[in-house]
Length: 329
Image (tube, rainbow, N blue to C red; front, side, top):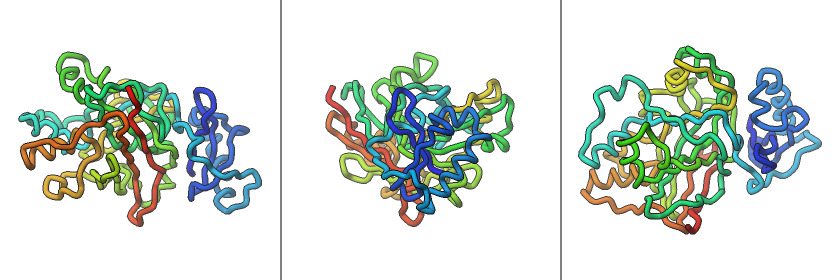
């Protein structure tokens, strides 16, 4: 099924959305918010599945036309936000462009940090409050939303606790990233609020795009109206969602409503095929530096826009899109 949240208070109002993203039904009599659903998933999800089936048959008497502009992030506030750098080619290129190499233990465990879990922006909210001289960048990702995850879960079993997937845009301030990582415990001020795509989908809704480990499809990324990325999301990461979840859960339980991403999607083949591009400006500039010696693509300034969308292999949108503009300082 496909779920979304109408803008309402801090935590939104849960709705069930049709496959074609044209209609919706409120779920407030079963679960007022997505967090409420996640808290009691086993009991409540089957009831919403029935609503979804009726809605997709065009038979639900309470269906209304879906207004995408009325949608908040599916989960506006999460109990935990974990994000990784699991596509190793993304890390390799950024390091190579500055004359550095990958650490020898890069494949020992996924790189993951803990980010801001409150206040996720909606799919079309502007990026606000950021200075252009901090080098504003976006990152195109796919996030998993989990239920309860027990401490010590294996990587094989961990994906059983994934309830939903949605798009994730992880804003980065590139001028701050390198010095911050060098002198602190990890990302902090370099990573302001993130944004979620409008539609959250259950793993079964993805069909063959979900193989139990990775979500496949083509992530198309446009900056200032020009395509800079056409990336296959299901390959080129040595770590899958189960690995990432198990790595963190080795020492902690997860509360329902944990959001975890594998990082900016990236493909090895982009080294030779320029059309594949990258899922963020930073990596695209790294490719330019490696290929030509000069990084030309500019970071975002006020008024600049970008768009990211995951398409299936027939060109259909899988979970909506994120389209944002950088607000004036």
